[in-house]
Length: 223
Image: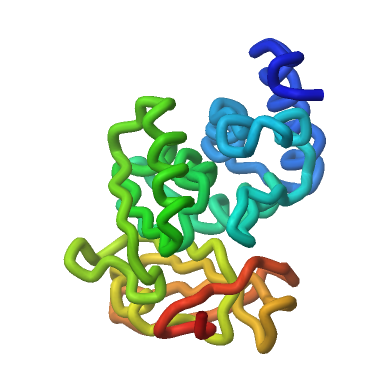
């Protein structure tokens, strides 16, 4: 079924069902995150042919070998960041902009980096449709972060690499959190949470297995 055969009420119902059946049912409980995901129209961020699948708990292709992550994984990652309304967030791998929009609902400012120009342009257009004004986008190697605007209270990486990129750790503010998929191959990773305390000491934990597209850049996989 194409987007043209769905009206906004249909999408709103599908979005509410997504939150109840996929997010709450699997243990996500942060009300701010759940409310943000109930507001942001995921179907805006996929191609028209995929719109009817937008609220299923599955990743979807967005072109150029990239995907939009499944809703549960987006919710899990964002919840683990523990965002406050005054936080500044660095997002690596903005893609078509869906997670960017979720973050913008929860934080004061989102600085998002995308390395593929067609997706950068697509994401920028998608976010402009929603009228979000607290997002800045950059076309660049995301493994370098955005050093001139650091530090950040939270950093989230939407692609999997062989290690945690050191520039992202360096740009994390004291008390901040970094979420990144890490693994020895491009097809298997652990969703990894890095926390930096007020003295700059790091702690590390894992949130489970995951599979993301490859994180490509100077501090990750080569292109």
